[in-house]
Length: 263
Image (cartoon, rainbow, N blue to C red; front, side):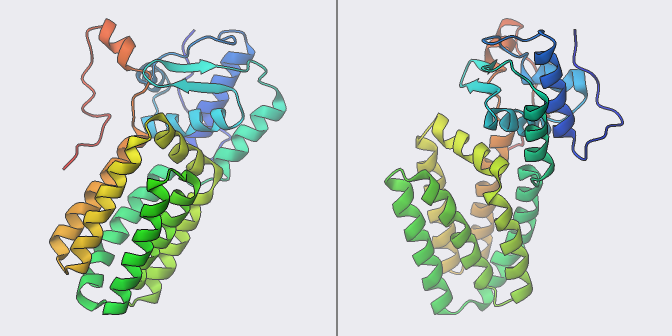
């Protein structure tokens, strides 16, 4: 039995509809404990939804212990007890959280302009504060303190905003960064790094290049590195953990429209 196509719904977000559909399938016995969900490609096609929305729904279901994602294998049902209370908790996580995908799009657009302004107006003290925030973030990442590493991401990006000398930019960026402590965002970021701890080193390298470019007052290079930073993070929302095996057996598929193209 296929998933229902998204249409008019009582939910504010498509991700809530998706999560509710998966829970209904589990409650009906279609997917039992230990069973594997269809690939993300199949679910998105059947429901007519985007991969970011599905990713958010799956993350919310992981938060409440209904699903488990196994890298390179797929997404499995770990708890088939899809009660009304659990459905309410899942919907609350999604409806009360801002979309990580949309948040990163907004931050990317704002920060590209912020970097260009910061390069031209930042005082030496602002650049020193940026380097300090970066060093703190780097130390925590290198010692594997994931929670602290993610927390210091806010300080790093706020340091860039403060270097613009523009309180409006700083205020908007702070509000966007405050969204990153919401449960949905935190869960998605933690899962991304826990699947492959070497990803922290990749992000540290990108951040290092951003700092070098800003402190060197090279706006064009700083923007290129910043775009790489956000492209990597946005790509994680599209990450295809469960499609590889299924699509290899079917001869593969053209997924160019699914994954943002890296610059």
